[in-house]
Image 1 (cartoon, rainbow, N blue to C red):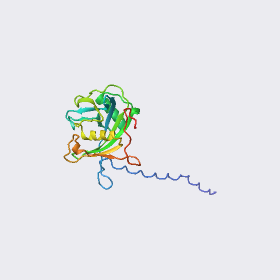
Image 2 (image 1 turned 90 degrees about the horizontal axis):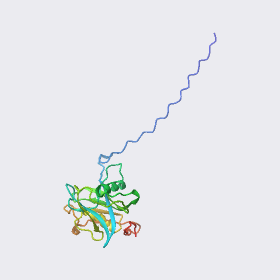
Image 3 (image 1 turned 90 degrees about the vertical axis):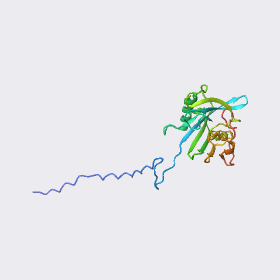
Length: 222
């Protein structure tokens, strides 16, 4: 009987290399980080600047806040918060403009006006994006009467004092052509604008540190 050589073992391919480990996600906003400290977060809100030529110069639309809201009774730009992470600031200001004034704005007609880092007298902070619509469809009117006690056009060069200080600071920075401003109020400061408690700090822009030119009625910088 002839001994046959044993058959070679079947070829077994080497195992696939182990995949690279997936890095663990970072902490969610407001959750403890690597060192146990909570990551600071601040609300983001948007402010709509609607501007038109007037008999005495350019005018801006302001509404009077009403009801159980912050700064009730004071004038403010049409404004609001982002609805969530799905919404960018342009979509948010378009939505707020429609909800509060009834006007229709296209994304292509939105311009950056000024960004303001604000701290209220109570210590809460937020970042506000002031955005100008250079064109819109419709006539502004009160659409939320439970939150708005009036709406009118006011001279941009002579804004009223009975405004929310935060909003007034943003418009003052915008009039000066600044791209960014800080408005950190102190404990005890009034919510309303007051010349004796003006906390506006203009953040210079450009190599020379000078604010940009003032915008004309069409929204172009001069």
